Length: 403
Image (cartoon, rainbow, N blue to C red; front, side):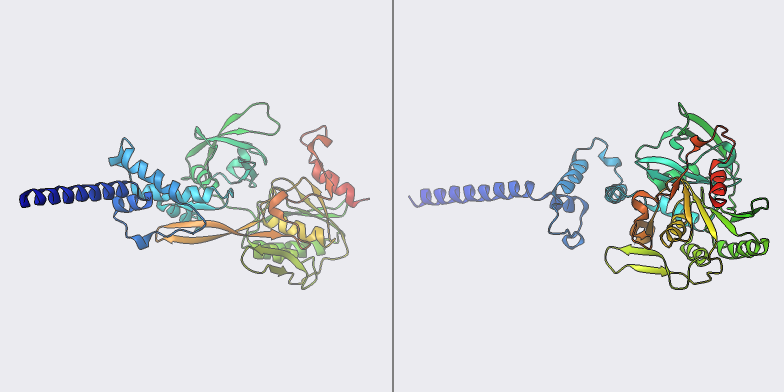
């Protein structure tokens, strides 16, 4: 009898033990996917944190499925999975200027910032999810090849640009001097796309050129970019304007992709009294910052036109918007590109970084440049001339100043 009781007890204990082990196993298999991935990757619990308002379950489930079911799982580079996840995070913002740079792209970006590159001499951007030419630079391979502001770039060396980030497109277009990049472009006035082969070169960005129409007594300053040299060269151009005796001025900012903010403030200061607002930088997490005129203001009380088109961007829009809001000049041409945002580069690791849009530019009256671009006071269209060789924008600007 005693032996039988012992057997019953042992069977009960075995049943309880088996039930415990089975329950533990089922619980282990059904635990959150973040724990499963932690176990696979041998990550300490403190290494993963998540905001309480966000359910990361789907993300960790997807990661776990890739780890356990992907047919070539042994070839997975988990670091690439992480870089891809961060890239997806930044692209989901919907801002083409907020971009994650994994190691290779980060190294390229750093060399680009230092100016160590060859290219075609064209500023590009994203408009309505399309890669477009903002403006070809003066006397550049892009300009000589016939690229125009507004051209959509459909392919780069046969690679479809749909879904391609702006920085990836720039990286593909730029390269060693003497090499050729083939762009498939669709111009606004074209019936079908065409391929254009462009030989890369070292790009020396021009600053400006001047012209005096003595017959009409109109002085023209064509500003190509807002570089570190623009302030001094614009000072020289203003001096030339004053000595010319002209009393009417055209500031031509067409196809000017922008550049340094300091140059924009410096150039606007020739027309605005000291302390007047040139632009406002609007942030999410702190008070706006106002940028004000240095007050050179030696050029006042004259008839002035600023010419813009869809290739006028960034610093060009800041200057044009300031002169428009303060009633200094009449803006003529096409609606501008609308690149009115500020990016900041943040290190994620030693060899990766995240370029993120942290602010927007507003005109002195509070108009957002980045949303729609600037609307000219007087719109000019290319259809207003029968001869495509005529510069109808310049013709209309001169006619306006002579009224």
